[in-house]
Amino acid sequence: MVVIAHISDLHFGRDVPLLADALASKLREIGPTFIAVSGDLTQHGRRDELEAARRFFERLPAPVLAVPGNHDMPKNPWLRFVHPWRRWHEVFQRELEPVLRGAGWIAVGANTARAGGPYLDWSRGRINEAQVHGLGREFANAEPDALRVLVAHHPFLLDDAALARGLIGGAADAIECMRRARVDLVLGGHVHLGYADAVGGIVVAQSGTTFSDRLKGEAQGFNLIRAGRERLTVEHYRVEGSHFEHDETTTFARGDGWARVIS
Image (tube, rainbow, N blue to C red; front, side):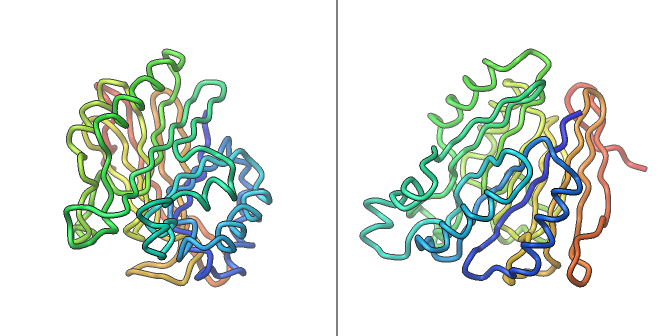
């Protein structure tokens, strides 16, 4: 079984240190296979915020796959439009679209943040055709029965509470390509709400902000995914006082793709 801790929207610069410590302790207790961080590591994309995120990752008990979000670009217009990811590369010395592999699983990151766009809300992300084909090639090289996981910042599925935020641009084409690539699970953030459902036979799980004070309708939280060949569960953990406690579990079964189990 693959156990994934899915955290998001850490917003160093607006983080709550007590909750960051509580999360690190909880993850040491759980011992996940790997940790997926679906963007917005920082509040303003400053170097000191990125360095705080890096130091936090060094405390964690498993490999970390982190992708950037819209908040991880600098506010300075010159840097934002000319060198949006210079600080990211300098601090993390890692790719914007990392790949992790292990026994029976592969996780691929997609950078969906953009410096600007056709929307008034520039925080909305996009995934383009070249990225989708690149993801398909990575997944095609995985073991035939490997769990295939995509990690991105922007949502490929919205629940009712998040409809006003807008789907990621290119969502429909990307979902169809991922379906052909036999992707099992897509992890995202951005909307600061935690939920999970299936679309196109793929499980989509969103994490709220895990330990920042930027709340948008629910307490801080994270997801714990347990994935076997026939069953996949998304366990949601929510802050209670100064600790993370299990809140609810959503279960999916594999048939012709994944489908939610309605109890």
